[in-house]
Length: 267
Image (cartoon, rainbow, N blue to C red; front, side, top):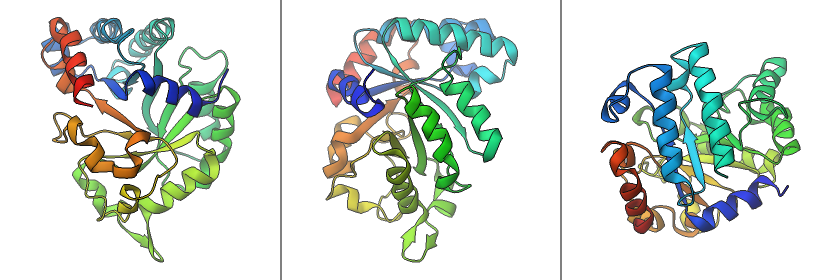
């Protein structure tokens, strides 16, 4: 099997769109589904069906399954089995971060050979030091998977921590450097499309290729427009996996295909 970066590039040739799967109570209501683990499963399966042959990447938000406990994880396992059968790349949005044996437990859960939650990538919090993720990166590479480190996230509270400096470099810049060091292009970063890159000390990515994948939330309901992707990211635009969730799903399941096709045309 090819490396994560190669497989991601191939998926992005089909479309740089990544469809988020966020079965919140309100989203399940939009689909006419109950706020249960079964509802979350059916919601996800409808999205996967609409994505198949149209886009290559999905991003389930694990918290919305986790809230149902063991039933939620059983639902998630079925979702992943179906997604793999549809040849979709899975970015598990779990935002884990730890050290030592605990982090290896997470690695085994999301990258284990026989794990029903095996993913193509996962999101990680690097704020215990990017070096703490090196061993987990090894697990990812063993199965040709990748990771995305939170660098300049789309939430308004991000600025408080992620713009802080160590020497002349912001935390966001240090995360990018750390991703490059431990990942050899199989580690990317999360950069919100709504953030002022200059404030985070990373506006250089507009004039110079960042050289690693960017997972970019913030499109759609958070305010960024897919049609502005090249203006937002400049020289690094070709590295961007553009995540859209509610802007595609809020109209309910009957409009999924139309909304996915519309989003693709905007990119």
